[in-house]
Length: 392
Ligand SMILES: *Cc1c(COP(=O)(O)O)cnc(C)c1O
Image 1 (cartoon, rainbow, N blue to C red):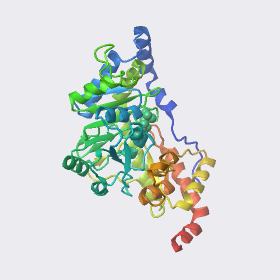
Image 2: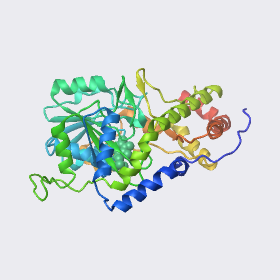
Image 3: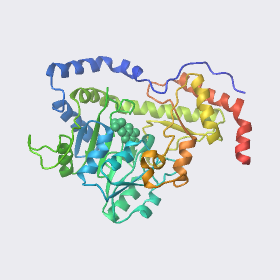
Image 4: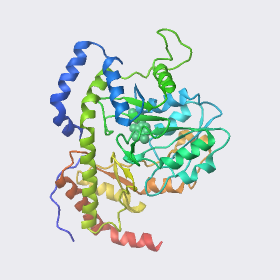
């Protein structure tokens, strides 16, 4: 038995702690925007777009109202709609497939790699049909999907690739940042993302100036020039206040990413020190990739996951399940005709994964308490059950 770790509360997310560190920089820029009385799009948004294009290594960036819209607008730009198919993963936040559905196209799911939770490139080719128009890989939890083979399949079949990079700003794939790996990429500034605003926000990156112009048009009802509409878009404008706040936070982003990576490394060594790596599957960073650890997701046998979560909740350790129901089994997609067993790796991940607290401000002491508590749970409850699971 291990010694009882010192009890300390560990929220799943602690945005307040981050705000304390930047309050002095944020308050003046909020004041600046208020004084300007220019609240929607405008110079703050244009500056943010320039800075993020530079950051992602793309020619252009276009702000919009949310990460969900940052997926929908590219699909609209590409003219994807009824009769078309778009390949994506069944193991993601709802918006990934929801955006495809909203255009009238059909989401075609391809199962994940069990160790990275990202779409398995080896399964994509078999899902391509004459109706396929695009692929949306998701860089889940902050680690890039395996983009080289995905881009090769796309080139072979003349498909567009839209990266869902909502969880992965700053992540590196073979020396290149996400956002510049596919044809268009979607980012989210939802407060829990690594670059989070004080509300909703999103952005798209691309190297194609024609696509960028079309995205910028569609986010203002397809208007260009003013009050002239050759196509129908919708309102997906980014607020100047969000842009101004995000510009301050962008200067800190790489430092925060390093802190997240350090916290992930510390979890790894704590799990090893407690001898838990046989029972607890840890995140795996692929060779040549740099994860930004938007989430730190562990894996335990399915029968243990929910009891473990309850035990941690009782100790004021916040956890989350990303995602309990894979997209192909969501009731709203019943007409696609999927059933349990269709995507076994995604379904197993939905049963077995648990996200532990991870953020730049997470302390050594908090991490000791999290891993020590998992150790105590396993000591107290799990050995018998694990043995039973294995015998079954
Ligand atoms: C957060 C998220 C989105 C949607 O972003 P919003 O800003 O909440 O609309 C899309 N895809 C993934 C993978 C996400 O995590």
